[in-house]
Length: 158
Image 1 (tube, helix red, strand yellow):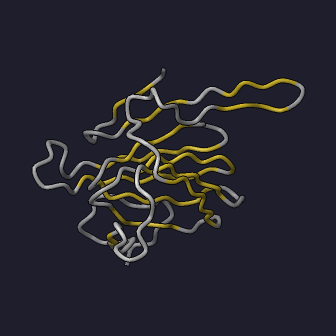
Image 2 (image 1 turned 135 degrees about the vertical axis):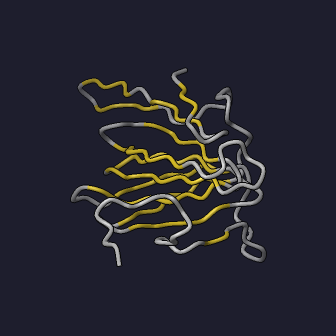
């Protein structure tokens, strides 16, 4: 498998292989033998319009596994975890049709994404826990929070 560990401890980027022929293509995303796979809870898809930022949030109980299957996205990550050796580090990844990857985002790491280019972005996320509507494991921080050392390209200061 082609894995890269990022500068944020626990973040894993898995490069994906596209197998194409005259009928179309196939691309494996996540396998049960991937080093970051912790079990199945649910899989969902979300979309984002070009230029829109969906950020920031984090989880206390679940890891995320992002894969953009249509369009392109800029994924931003910021380690705000107390006691983490990589606290204060950020990562800036561009993933999607032109760079197929799965990004494993550990519990507690702030994350979000921005659709880039001119097309709608389709992001699939596989998580180990089903979404609990009664007690959601989702904690939000404003997309332009000044304490997060990350700037979304095209963001206007002020």
